[in-house]
Image 1 (cartoon, helix red, strand yellow):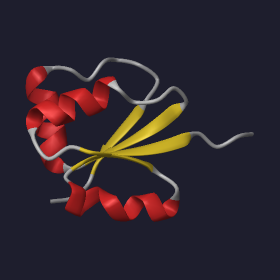
Image 2 (image 1 turned 90 degrees about the vertical axis):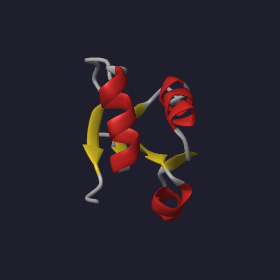
Image 3 (image 1 turned 180 degrees about the vertical axis):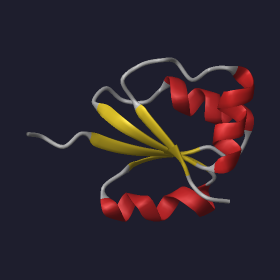
Image 4 (image 1 turned 135 degrees about the horizontal axis):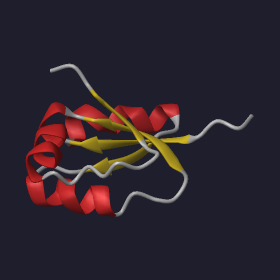
Length: 76
């Protein structure tokens, strides 16, 4: 069994450290950057860790597709 790749999307101060654990980090400090980051997720990402602000942006825009990616939201 192979482990899928993990990405983190959101504000730099919340996601930068996850690169040390091997996550693909997509810094997004404003709503448009969040939307761009979501659309540019590389192939092979199975888990996306979202900051609360990123999750709010994607949820309000109804961008999150029903695909195979698991998404989780960091606690506030």
